Every structure is written in structure tokens, then in C-alpha cells.
Length: 413
Ligand SMILES: *Cc1c(COP(=O)(O)O)cnc(C)c1O
Image (cartoon, rainbow, N blue to C red; front, side, top):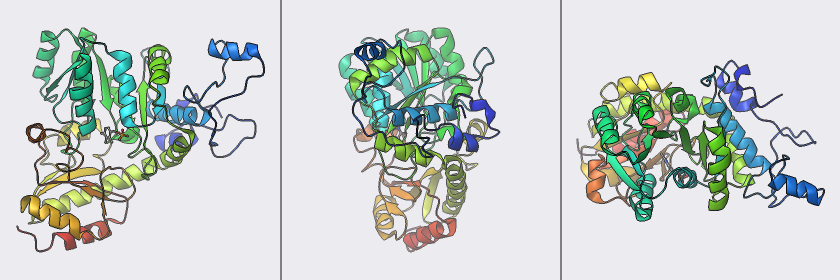
């Protein structure tokens, strides 16, 4: 079994299970947890050679660790599944596994950008990403332009007006309105300006969307969500197609930032990914049912789900993604008071932030995930005070609907 031949599987379901194997001499069936900070050298020369990278081998777990490396290879294989490079060979990607999604974003930004550079991105973004750009990077002289990336004329105009733009960052679908960006169209606009494009693929996962097929340079995930799938570890991954850049500048930044993942979390992640395709199919099918059911409910004023024909990005989502995914949001006719009542009445669905776990999670973005944004910025991103977000789980859809039904009963219509 060679992990370096992603093309040999008919379907990505098999790649999720068979792309990696234990490279140790005991042939462990499961990838072992290498709980070690450091690695032993046979000789002084071997240590020198490993540091000089003239000989393969592990040195210190902040740099690399066999369990985290296995998870990196698995995710790279899935993002590259079935894709070819410009020369027609199987696409090779390099992944770096981080302690969180924010860690992966840090390595991307600190390895690519310097003071004076500009990021072009969307108004609606994950709260932590928005704050990372608007607060942390702004303080270091890296500015961010927040525009509507679905307006391709505005993208082109920004690129023309601001030669300092170095990176376009896309989140598609976005949190929590499930707005989509035409990734291929944005990449086409970016190429003549030499601007790199990154995609936060957390909501879609490589099973639902492969941004490298659409021309992007970088993909990152919060692996905390669907890739892990069970809510057992925080994690993130940065994946790049310029393997020279990833192996030199990005790896150096990664080592210096110290935002590496640990072997225990990587083990949980690998186990989660084995069932990723199965889970994403069930998540999406349940979410479609729930969205259609909510849309017809009199107490619900509006449903935001890219799998509904009424969603502005329904057609784009159908073109760009295998299925629309697990996350949706909705507005109750009774506003914020009804929202509180609804959340407090839930019996089975879990009251929690985060998303992508096997159970259905329900949260209130304005007071939770997006509370760090200024209220006017939140509203500009379409996050009203009464909006409720659901990450639809893989329970029996009948049980999810029954819980929603009892929690919604008697609310103002
Ligand atoms: C959770 C999340 C992040 C941040 O990831 P962490 O693992 O919490 O650091 C980034 N983007 C999206 C879309 C997310 O849902």
C-alpha cells in the first residue's frame, strides 16, 4: 500500500479509509499515537543530517510527529482526490496540521503577508477570522478590504485600484447565512494580478467541495468541525499546492509560531475522517429535510439554506458543491424573545456553539459566535439579533423534526 497514489481509488469514500497506513515496523492496524516530544538519533551525524534535511526522519514534535504527519497526508489526499496538476500528473498537495483553525490561518497569513499588503475578503465571515484580520493583522500594518465577493465587478475593481492586494480570502459557504462565492470566477480574476486565493473549506469539507479543482492556492479547515466530526478535539489544517512554498516558508512559519497539533488530537481526527463521506451525506440529507420543514412552518419567518430554491446562491451551490451541507440558519417571526424560548425548550438537539458534530447543535450567533463583531458590522453581514443557527446532525431526521416541532409550538406566527 502506498499512500502516494490518490488516483487508485474509484471513490473518495475509499480514499478516506485507505490513504494512510502506519509506517512503523510493527504494522499497527490503526495509526498509533506517538506521544513523544522528541526523537532519538543513532549518531551525531544522523542528528546533523536530519536538521539539514539531507536525511528523512523526525526531530522534535513541534516540527513534525508521525501521527500528525499521517493526518496531514490523509487530508491532502482528500483535497487532491481525482485532481491533476498543470502537467496532467496526480495533484500533489502539502498539508500542515495545527492546534486550531485559527492556528492554520496564522501560518497562512504570517508566511504570505508583510506590512503594507492588503487582503481582499467577504463581509460575511467566521467571527474569529473577521477579528483576526480587522484587529490583529491591522495592528501589524496588513489591511483588509471587506467587500461582497459575489459582486465580481467589485472584486475586479478592487484588484485594479489596490496593487497591494496579495491575498483574496474566501469562505464558502459562509457562516451563518450560507452565502456562496463563485470560487472559479474569483480565481480567474486573481491570476493576472498575481494574487493568491485561499478558501476556508470548513463548512463543505473535501467531500462536498474541492477548491483546488476551481483554481485556488490554499485551503484551510477548522478540523474541529466536520473533519473530526465528533466534537472531541480542536484542530486546523493549512493545505497548499505550491509544495516548495509549503515545505520552506510555510513550514518555517509553522515551526516558529508553535501552533502545531498534538498526536492525540491527530489520532481522533484520523478516526473521524474515515466516516466523513458517510456523515456528510447524512448531514446534508437531514439538513435539506429540516430546511424545507422550517420553511413551511408558520412560526418561522425566513430560512437561510443554500439547498433551498429561494436561497440566492442555490444554483451556484449546486454547481460548486456535491450537496449543500449541514448548516442552516433561520429567523423566528417572534424575534429574539421567541428565539430564547425556542432554544430553552429543546429536548434532544444540543444547545452549543460550534458545528459539524454528529449531534444537532443549535446556537444564537448574535450573542455567541459573532458577539465579538460590532453590532453594525454584524447587521451588515446579515446577522440579525433573532437569527438561530443549526448544524444539523446525523440523528434520525424524524427525531430532529419532532424536537423542533415541540420547541416551536405556541410561538408567535
Ligand atoms: C470554527 C471555525 C473556524 C475557526 O476554527 P478553530 O478550530 O475554532 O480555531 C474558522 N472558520 C470556520 C468557518 C469555522 O467554523
